[in-house]
Length: 331
Image (cartoon, rainbow, N blue to C red; front, side):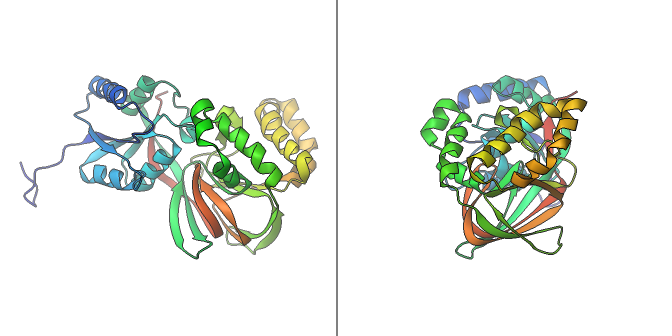
């Protein structure tokens, strides 16, 4: 049988886009083959990322070959790149988390640390439609570009932390390397002036140490940074950080670990949070909206899902509701 164009039809199949620096390819192939056979899938195609292609182009090739499920095997950068190519395609993304942070994998409750469990979810899980964050940026050199993010975008201190993270330490201790990086970034952090507009409203000025714009709120270590953030609500959750000195940073740390992680779990704890809300808002203001535009007085470092994007002058971020299908564990 051939198509109208005279070419043989493409049968549905899965494809794996993998980062060769992150995976044991022999183990991954065996795990994928077993999971695919168990759930009745045909042969799987394999696509390797490279220094010049983080996954966007290889994923486009996988789509052209007829893949109806694409497994992203790598860290957050690989997952973000694959998602960028799959956005609004209707083709499902499955994640084999073998990176440092594995941020989206944690937020959709995928198994971390078990290759076989992850591939079993890829072929035997269920589909969930989630939002995709879209960032349009203008760099310090006036170059403009558009990128997606799945977990969090950071301007200022958060991006400085990514820049300062030691690659050798990441290999040794994993996500704890970010703790070392942020402790080195805080003393050097200087507040900067911005103007921001939420939902197209009038610009508001502020002096901040950083802004984080989240599609979902959990960080490594099960830290609930923005606990109200949801992956499928069409809304971005925003944290404006305005600490004054080390005490301000300690107040933020207390909020995201003690209040968000412990007190929010009980009615009594939530009442305690309400009583101290005015104090907390002075160091960390939370906002919500479908989009936000930020203009900085002096160019600042910017990151998306842990990927560095250099210094930017203007950032416009918005939610693309339900733009990505991901495989999650079956109930």
